[in-house]
Amino acid sequence: MNESVQQKDDTYFFGHPIGLRTLFFTEMWERMSYYGMRGLLVLYMTIGVTGNPGMDWSNVQANAIYGIYAGMVYFLAVPGGWIADNILGYQRAVLIGALIITLGHFTLAIPLEQTFILGLVFVALGTGLLKPNISSIVGQLYSQSDSRRDSGFTIFYMSINIGSMLGFAVCGWLGEKVGWHFGFGAAGVGMLFGVTQFILFRHHLGEAGKYPNEIKEQVRRNYIRGLCFVVFLITSIVITGIAGLWSIDPVYFAQRFRDFLVLISIIYFIYLLFFAGLTINEKKNVLMLLLLFIGAAAFWSGFDQSAGSLTIFTRDHVSLNFGTFTAPVSWTQFLNPLFVVMFAPFFAYLWIFLGKRNLDPNMPVKFAIGLFLMAL
Image 1 (cartoon, helix red, strand yellow):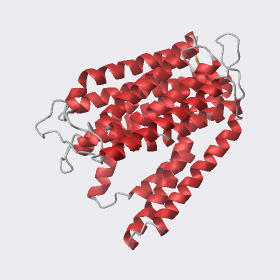
Image 2: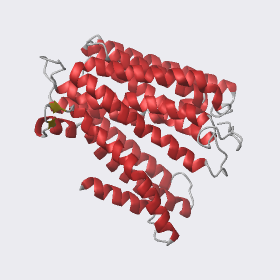
Image 3: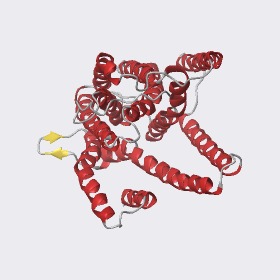
């Protein structure tokens, strides 16, 4: 990707390039929509058809569908990054992804089973385009030697927690207290805010992430033809499924999708270790990456239980009554980003304090501590 870096005298956003503001609010609204909808998803699928009606599916089916959706969100970041690198550029990938996400949330707001599945497909596809590439644009706002780079990412990641808290609060309340589809619609409105401000202030990004990699035009045209074929194939599968021409057991599909992800991960690391022609030191780095990969997979599989099995457990076994007020079940997920915001400054200071005394634990140890605390 062509690197375009903002000047160091660009300090309009808390001492950082003004383009960071554009990305901050785009990410904030995207995370508001993502987590706001995520907090309602399993609840909506498992609630009965009376009162505030849901889908009345079993807990097992709902968790399987949520698992497929969450897995697709993570998995599609890989082709999403490739498409940005070779065809669209990061900026256009973010914009197109944001538009698809917006369409997905408003599709979810339509009270039909067919549009529910279609909405999830749109959100997963759009997130795969937006999520990996917006972070890449942040990196291109700074030169490698710019001392503001790390703190810029810290500010950017704060938008994730602010957006998720906003999503749980607004979408959770509307979805559970007013109507599920009002909650999904609110997520769409939030994403629409994000799209609008990205379009209005995109020019502040300058050349950062504007163009794809420089490759031969014939190669790019071949990539575009291949992408069009994949889009046609996915569209055909989705439309025929919605039309009822085929169906699949979500539990079975979730299990096979899990097996597929494990298999390609094993094949990839075997390739790196034995067939990529790496040096001994590079192979040691790959082994370290493998350990972190396993740790990250364990962490995120546990983390995403908050919107699946833990949400069902909270609904069925935890009292959320505070006097005459009953809190929405999805509000319990508000606590995670709140604690991140509260404790992040403490841990930032702790690592600096330990580092000055040569006691700062390395990254694998920090991973292990995090997994241990999650297990507790």
